[in-house]
Every structure is written in structure tokens, then in C-alpha cells.
Image (cartoon, rainbow, N blue to C red; front, side, top):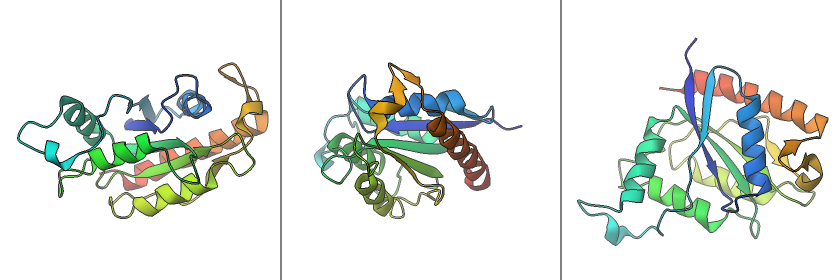
Length: 184
């Protein structure tokens, strides 16, 4: 069996964020066919095309290389103002350059959005979905993952909500099949 390397991009920069907890749950529930690792975005400078020289910022280069090495991407994002956080949008911009050599190209992906409210980050999920075709990323269409009322699903770092655990398991198993079908 081939093990596929998955880069998880967590849109929240907060160390104890619920989005990061959901990402950790996905890692714990992942089948053996997926090797999953969070790729940090917190140290990426704001994208500025003026930095696209023969010597771009080291953080840009390291991030792009890590994304290029992945067989697939799992985006885990909170919702800020019905959209993705600025840090996540910045990471997407960094990975999409230089033009014509995007690190994201052809990477199968999926999205999990997280919110303390009832809608589960619906706006962020769909705003991110709008960006992915331009990046040439086949995004898993279903199941869609909107994790609402997330605060009640965890006790510390431990997922305690069994219906969420069952959903996360089904989601990550489906994602493994999606990656296998679409990985290059």
C-alpha cells in the first residue's frame, strides 16, 4: 500500500485553537495510507511580489517546497468575517507564486471549517472553495465538513463528541480515497 503525504494547513494561528484541535483529530483518525503533518504558516511574511527575486524570503521557499512534496492538502480553517483568515489567504498567495510554478497545482484537497457558532464556518469553507479551481486543486466535493458548536466537542485537547468522531472518521477515510484517486 502506498502511503500518501498530506500537508495540513491550519488557518488559525492560535496555539490552542479549536481548528488545530480538529486537525489533530484528523491526524489521529487517519488511515495508515495517509501520513499527515501540519505545515505551519505563522512565520510567513506577507506576500509581496517585490520579494519574488532570485532570492525570495527563506520562509517562502521552505513553505513552497513542503507543499510541493505533499501528495494532498487538507485545509482546516476557522471563519473570520464570513471568509478565511488573512494568514490562510497569505499562505495560499505565497504557495501560488511564482506565477506558473504554483506549489498547489494538481494537489487533491479537502476543507474542514470550524466555528463556535452553529453554521460551522460555512462562509469560510465556500470562500476557500472558490479559490481552489484557479489553483488547479481538485477539491473533494463530499462530505462537506462544517464543524459547528466546536467548543462542546472537546475537553482540553480530547475529542469527546462521539458523533463528531464518527463523522471525522468517515470524512478522513473518504479523503484518503480521494487523494489516492487524484494524486500524481
